Length: 389
Ligand SMILES: Nc1ncnc2c1ncn2[C@@H]1O[C@H](COP(=O)(O)OP(=O)(O)OP(=O)(O)O)[C@@H](O)[C@H]1O
Ligand SMILES: [Mg+2]
Image (cartoon, rainbow, N blue to C red; front, side, top):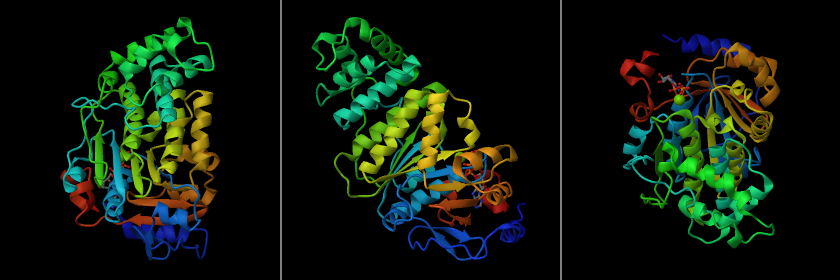
């Protein structure tokens, strides 16, 4: 049993400020402000419009079982009720009940082919190509290689990975300010070949075999059952594919939930792509909800990749921090600027409670799950789950 009331009282005593400034947002209820007992709402678009944040990205951080997925699935239901388009990249395949609630089937790459270039602008197609080939080669592309991929990707509106490989095989025909020789593209073709024969590649070579209603309120992409390398490459492809689906619609707010977000930060090519995907999302009027367990996960990567990850962390103005173990204390202070008191609080949170640090204001929030949401989001309902509290 988790003693919520005791913990709540302890937290009240532990919070270092007497009267925190509430965010004052009236949209998308989340739960209860533990300090004041009043309702806490958060809508990234409203926060942006009110100037509380300058960027709609939300970062959700928390140890295993602390309540991250429960929160994001519940936000999916609540934000969809406001007419926001929810796109859920789901590496654990937990979103099936949510999909049936919305009356749609999750998209499963493997059963269908997803062409990562569909609907992207020429510039975005180039970046997608660079990310996928870089991930396949496991190294950053040279400037000439990057120029070759950019030129091949810009060649015509219709692009897929097979066409990209074909165009690169004829470097003399590429329109580029640089002279691109066969030698320059050799590794690229080898990389595409490796990708094409990999498990991930087989799910994204050729034209898409799935069509999706771009206006569907909820779209879940189930990426469960894949090894780490496959998953990372699939996450790149799917973030692009989802953006391409939006086409020119810049009016309806969109929310992309990216669980296991840190996987994109295991190499530079995919990290660069994640950075670009966040930028694209702003241009399309979208908010990313990026989920990760520990900031320490980002420390073990190479220096360039780490710099990109730390830059994204520094830029995110909405950090939702669930329970964290003591060994993360230094990273929480250094990378997202939590104070000593806040670090001590996040070590004592129980599942469902998080420190919401939004544009420099902090609130400890107890996320309240409604009866309707419970069967949609409880990952361990069969074992008693939330009722066990
Ligand atoms: N707001 C909440 N109210 C009550 N119980 C909660 C709440 N959030 C989470 N829990 C409990 O914690 C369990 C684990 O939550 P969840 O699956 O969201 O964790 P997680 O942080 O996503 O874990 P992982 O890192 O393993 O994916 C839930 O099944 C539920 O029992
Ligand atoms: Mg989870």
